[in-house]
Structures are given as C-alpha cells and as structure tokens.
Length: 231
Image (cartoon, rainbow, N blue to C red; front, side, top):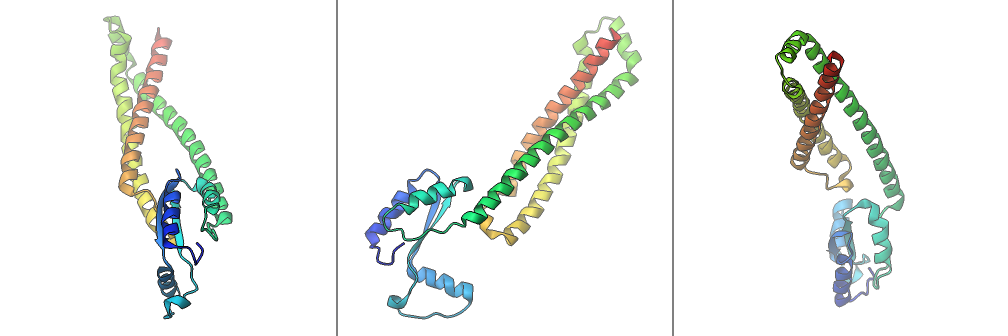
C-alpha cells in the first residue's frame, strides 16, 4: 500500500478485500513489522527511527484456490490505496500447469488400475467357481436359485476388494505422510498441505467403497458368466 495511506483507509481496504469471494484470510503488515521481518531474513540489525523506515505497509492475502489468484489480484489492484502487487504470476502458472498434468496422469492411472483390479478379481473368482463346478452343479440339480449360488462368491469378492483397499490405504497414507513432511520443508510457500489424518480418513473411505464395488462387480460378472455357460 502507499506509505501515506491513513489508518481509516487501511481498515476500509481490508474490509473490501475480505468481502471478495475467493479470499481466505488477510494479514496486515505495518512498516515496523516489515522492517523486523527484513532484519530476521537478512540476519542484520537495521535500527532506525520510525520516520526513516522506507518500507510501506502491506497486506498478505491468501486465496481459497490458486487458480483464482490472478482474478483476486486484478480486483485488489483497482482498489484505492494499493500501490503494488506481487504474486509470482510466472511461477504460479508453471505450478498450476504441473498440477493439471499430475491430476490428469493420476486420473488415467486410477482408471487403468481400476480396470486391472476388476479383471484380477474376476479371474480369481472364476478360478474359485471352476474349482467348485461339481458343487454348483449339485446345487442346481436340487433347485438352488442363481442368487443362492452367487452369494458366497459375492462375499468372497467383497473380501478381496476390501482387503486390497485397506492395504492400499495403509501404503498410500504412509507415502503421503513421508512426502508431505518433506515437501513442507522444501517448499514452505505451498502450505497448507492437507493434514495426513484428514487425508487418511477420506482415502480410507474412498478406497473401501471402490474395493467393495470392484469386489461385487468382479464376482457377479464371473459367476453370472459361468452360470450362463453351464445352462
């Protein structure tokens, strides 16, 4: 902000910025606070009279979503009392581009792994069904319905799916904790990173749901196809 901005205008500016929909929080840094931070960063003593301090007051603005930083910056730049804006546009664009690429690759790998998991469960259940061919045939001869025959295999498929989900959640949560702690140290400006407990809970629920659905779908397809071939 301008050095000559009055306190009442600072308060007004903060309220205007806070009302922007994408703003998460605001930190006001007075000139003396900026001087102390500069001394700490440079590890030197810059003792001087307040009137000699060349640093202006500033606002540190954090947004909800990094994709809206430029939009927020354009709006803040038009407000009265703002002299300069810095938000690392070039670096930001590169980080967002990398983020989009990682999300796309992650989505593609998730789909491929989901298909591979489905076929693995299908083949596993199919081998079990073939091994119990005589028992299934006997059950059909005494009048057992298709669903009565399917249920044990569906439960087996669910067991395989949930077991794989729990093991995956354990490995991924450990990996997330390992890399997130190191990423926070190496790139502190990317904070906050999602807490590992919140991530673990969401990951566990998502993987268990996927494992359940994969188990049901894989076993149902295998048993239904076997029963259709035997009919």
